[in-house]
Each structure stands twice: as C-alpha cells, then as structure tokens.
Image (cartoon, rainbow, N blue to C red; front, side, top):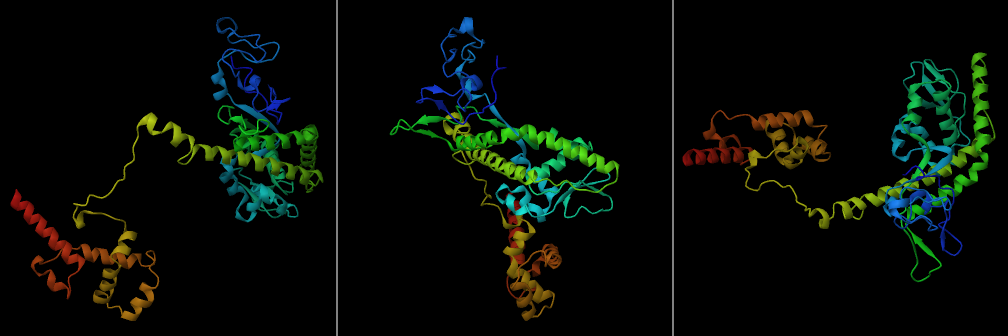
Length: 408
C-alpha cells in the first residue's frame, strides 16, 4: 500500500499557480507523502474506501488511503555529492586529527584549498589517518589523492573502500556514516500555512527553508552527476595503473576544488537540517517534553533528591574532592600541627592553589589520620588545643550510641 510513497522530492515549490494546487514534486506532494483527505485522491476519481482503498489513481498518481500517512511517510533527496552524516562527525575527527579540523567544517572549506593533505592507511588495514605528505611512511600506504576539501576526502575513503576493498572504509558507507540520501520529514510535522494577514504569502517552520536550499543546491549539481562518476572511474583506473608500475603520481584535477566547494555547500545545509530536527525534539519546548511527556498525557511530576536532614554527620559520604574543599581549614591545621609545616609554606603552597590532584597523597594521609580510632575515648579533647571536627564527630557518635543503647 505504501510502495508508491516516500519518493524523490525535486522541486523547491510548495504550490503551483496561485496556491491552488500542490506541486507533486515538492515538499507537500500527495503522491509522495499521501493524500490530504481520507481515502480521496487529488483529482477525486478514487474516493470510496471499501472499493478504492489501497489503489493508486492513474490520473494524479495519488494513493487512496488514510490522511495520517502524511504524519509518518518520509520523502528523500538523493544527493549528487555524498556528505558526512552530521551525527557521525566525531568518528571522522579521529581520522582527520585536530590539526586538520577545518576539513570537516563546511563554513571553512576555502581554508584547505591551498594545502596538501592525504589519506593514509596502515598495512594491517585497521587504522586511517590524514597526513601532511605523500612521501613513503613506514607501515602506511598513502592514497595519492590530494585532499583539498570534503569531496576529495570522501573520494579518498571511497578509493580505500572500492579499490583496496578494506573493511575499515567499507563500513563508513555501509553503516551510513557517509550518506548520499537525505530523508525529508513528513509534511504534517513541518507545517506550511498561509499568512492570515497576507494570504499571498506562506509561513513555514525553519527546516522547510533548509530543505529548499538543499534541493536547490542539489538541482544545480545534477548536470555534473554523470561527469563526476566518469571522472572518478578514470581517476581510480589511473591510480591502479600507477600502483602496478610503481609510479608515485598524485591525482591533480582542476575540477576537484569545484566539487569540494559544491560538497561543502550540501554539507552545510544537511547540518542545518539535523540542527533543526534536534532543536524540535529537545528542550522544554521540544516535541518530547511538550507533547509526549506533557502533564495532560502522563500526569508526570518532578521531584528533587536531597539528603535527609536528620542524618548525622558521620553517616554522610562525599567524594574526596568535595571533602577537600569542605575541610580545607582542618587539613591546613593538620599540616601545621602534625606534619610540622611552616606557616609561610602552607600559605604559599596550599592556600594559593587549592588543587586536589597535587595534594592527593598527603590529603589521603590526613583522612587516614582523621578516621583512625582513638586509643582512649575519654581524652578526645586533650588531643587538640581547640575543638576540631574530628573530636566533635566522635563525641556525637559516642553520644548517639549511648542513647541507642539506653533506648534498647
């Protein structure tokens, strides 16, 4: 029933004419996303559920089905130049490295036009990385394609996957880390309405604008599609010939920077689409919090986990870093009283830089001393010239135990 749905969107228009007819190749297409009216095609030829349900109209090409298909049917845009999936960019940062970070940023694509970068793979075929030179590196094979942007980077990965046949690169394409198809959200999730004040104008959510930009850019690139595929085949054949004859000659073509720029523009709009989706589902105003987890649906509530105020001090556990801050004065007292630190050393070393990692070992000594049992509990106050947390906690613990014994 849905075989004809989810097709290719190629038009940037929502309507044709004076907003009377929906563009059947556009972002609101009934033939791609489903009918607007329940069990009624666009032209009205099919309109009976029991008889026409599940059929596709031979006039308008619209499926006779329920209108809620427009809430769950996705369209697609097939890209001329593949791009990196926005949610998988962290994986490619490991390959590219920090010094080549501009390579993955489509807004800074021009910064790499005059640089020389190459993709290298280990002889064990388990690691990929971008290097600065094509010279021989022990234990590595360098792909002789100069990387000047996103397209040339993906082209190098494509060579490793298709020509060398290495799984480490094949997985990037098989697992959709590198994509050439972008899904389009169902139209009922990204509504388009007429402006109530100006009926000739339309209002729509931001993600529609990014879809329009991507479709427009992709349509501009379509005349190059067959040429690009033929050039890639020729480049790969040339590299194979050079490898067989042990000739080290990199691929240089004036078309590659042009393809880099086109890929960067597509990557930019794809990133914008993903950003809009994440903004739409995250946060307090997002779809999940406002609709799915709303009070009217689930009657959910919020609570805060806090410490029981009736707990005694010796029953509360905190991390050493927090304790280091809380008991810092007593730690300094311990250093001066029991470790014979001079006061100026304590001031210069410890009070100026309260870094737990630097004082970790000696603070552990302080905690061990603090928690060690007393030999004579009657003389707790004689150990210090002034009352300390240690003595107060121990005294309170003894009093609590005495009360519990008396109650039993």
